[in-house]
Image (tube, rainbow, N blue to C red):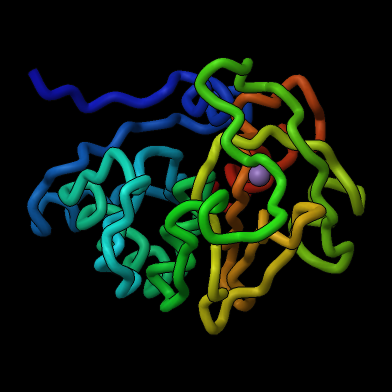
Length: 220
Ligand code: MN
């Protein structure tokens, strides 16, 4: 039996920030998606399996995992819509990768295989999801820097892929100590922010709650 499911942490983080979150099915046709989209005030692109490497013109890789082509198609459609219509969006983990690929960037298929001397970023499945795995340096002048209110912050890390070539038009806003990009934003968009970590598991920390709060306020 196929399920359409989402970790409850996203729902709780958004509801606590004042949103009325709605889960989007991953395999609707375009007419239904367009009708749904017109009623939404903003979209969170959540974590999940890997984007099909064909979207960034890269060969299959043995460590690419959990591809869901219906979800890919749905999310790229919605990403194009939020950008074209200026609706707020927040990308998380797979979400930052989606934003980068959708705007013409590429990914490392597997950090351990492709980035020499990289830190460990795949702290799963045997670690708590709020495990603070590494720090990130945050650009103080960016929207992310203003919302977090600091230039260095510790984050969880539940990914094995990452941005390789940054998409034209995206501004990098946070880096891990090994140089992996952990934050981007879309300048001149009402609210276009994405992070490689999972703030929904870190809502005990006020700076992480501030990301959801700002997204919800922008969408209101
Ligand atoms: Mn990381």
